[in-house]
Image 1 (cartoon, protein in one colour):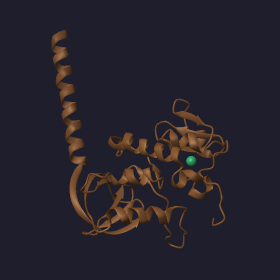
Image 2 (cartoon, protein in one colour; image 1 turned 120 degrees about the vertical axis):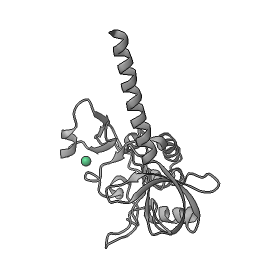
Image 3 (cartoon, rainbow, N blue to C red; image 1 turned 60 degrees about the vertical axis):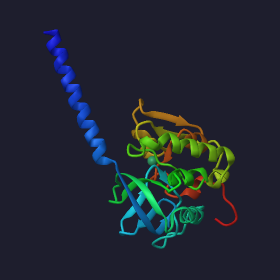
Length: 223
Ligand SMILES: [Zn+2]
């Protein structure tokens, strides 16, 4: 009886594993494409007019629909242009975002991981999620190095103490006095004393709590 149960369990486990690998293969797709146009630091338009969003990162916005650019939005777009404009890239597509844009990890012919390059220059921050999990370690180490070096946005990140609350599941951080913070269950709740600690831990700012990047930066004359 016990042996039969063990056999059933093994068959069931094998079934689950087959389902999981089939799912992963269907999700991940490799292709080559030429970049026609660079929209901003983390979005490009391919030759076939598909919009490709770099997975696992978020770059400051450029000006659009009457909304002014965020600090470093223009620099992020310039770096992305220098890297991929007119280039044939290799893309590991991992799915679509909620706006229907293709999500992917982008590589140049020489192996350069473009998503990582933007973080290494301090021109974006990590945006954790299930789709970017295979690249998370590489992306976070690039971001941490950029933070230590004070590159790009990190040279202007507001270091003053400010209580923040992170959600271990979503890997987003919120204002501790806002409505989102109250909804996080105690098992998923993690406290951060300031922005640098939250970013260094690989958490990304919640868009509702922090709609604009400049709110988290020390002001300079041009803002
Ligand atoms: Zn929030």
